[in-house]
Length: 87
Picture 1: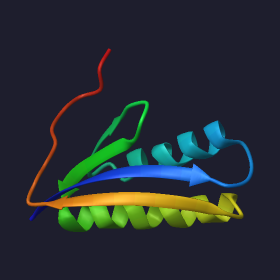
Picture 2: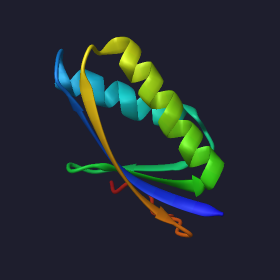
Picture 3: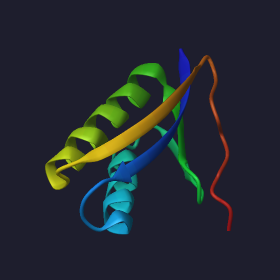
Picture 4: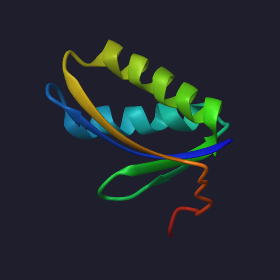
């Protein structure tokens, strides 16, 4: 089953830009999902287990780097975004 998610990470400590970019890099590292980033959030899409796994791994890695953070995720089952980054 396909799954799309919109993610917004809010680091409560440390350098916000570096932390958010590292989180996005961790999502890209999965290699099994589409990742589209804009100024408001990051959208990911792919097979259900791949999306869930990518979020889980990226959040664990981010938790190792940051003391405190908030991750807001909105899931849309049975949907897949296939848009490339602009530019």
